[in-house]
Image (cartoon, rainbow, N blue to C red):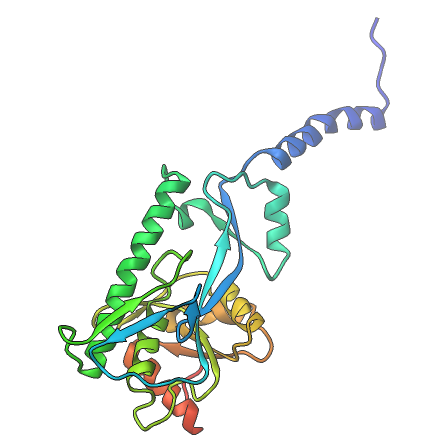
Length: 262
């Protein structure tokens, strides 16, 4: 014997599979990572009691101010990110939801990715030193630069490492500090010829920089719009494309001259 269903009851029964589908989707892992502002480190200072930059073969100068490299922290490739995590990230300024494949190479374990990031950082440090010495006209066979920064991976600190070497050796070139005594932060890869490259995550890095006291942020020019998206109050952006341009901008900032802006 069949009984007829009222319309409300029929709609409720039809909705059950849809509700179940959303419930399953909310619990299922999704191909995303969630990133947030990470630590910053002053390359002119020390890390775990060891100077970040050590130079031999040339006289160095005492510096004032700081040059802060910036980082982001992202969930690992093996971490399950569900619909709730994604929704939370989309509605928070201090979180970013990124496709997993855009952050991590497919098929790599957390250990493999960590090893690659460490290798990238070591290569970046070597290139940053060469770029700085080349800019200053110093002979890399005579001037040796050692860079030490634990627990940080990837190549995005290259620009700040180069600027740190320049500040320790030459300052602003006129007896002053390249920082002008300010807390300067930034990000960007560096090539041996001084070209600055994009890195990603800049809107989160500006937040980390402001949290740690920086008021000026050097950003790869191609990422200006991303940096402006969630720019903290009181943070000044300076776009850069080359190491030479970054040095010139900092000199102009120190002297109150004209400085590029995003």
